[in-house]
Image 1 (cartoon, helix red, strand yellow):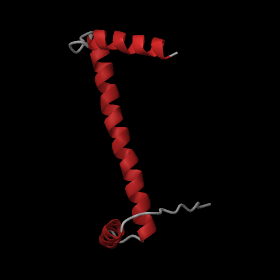
Image 2 (image 1 turned 120 degrees about the vertical axis):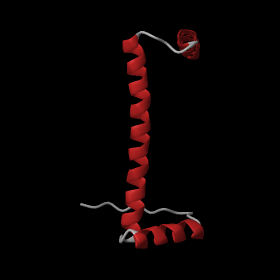
Image 3 (image 1 turned 45 degrees about the vertical axis):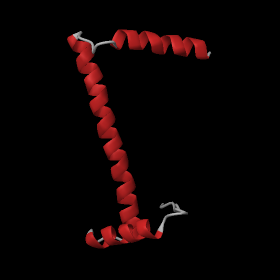
Image 4 (image 1 turned 60 degrees about the vertical axis):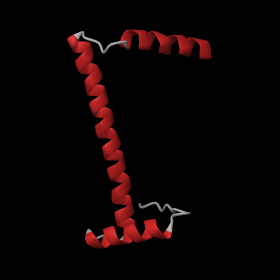
Length: 83
């Protein structure tokens, strides 16, 4: 079952760009909007995977970026004071 979402407040320029891209990709306006939304999440996931992998590699190598321990201590102190 397909759900419908509506985007309000999009500029005419954005709508035009989306329509041009949809035509170029042989998609409907709706299909193009969905594809672009999904793609934005794919990019976000890929970027976060890279960040997470960097943290894992750093932990496994037992080498830390300069100031990383001090930074973690500052974050922990801020978290405690926020309670």
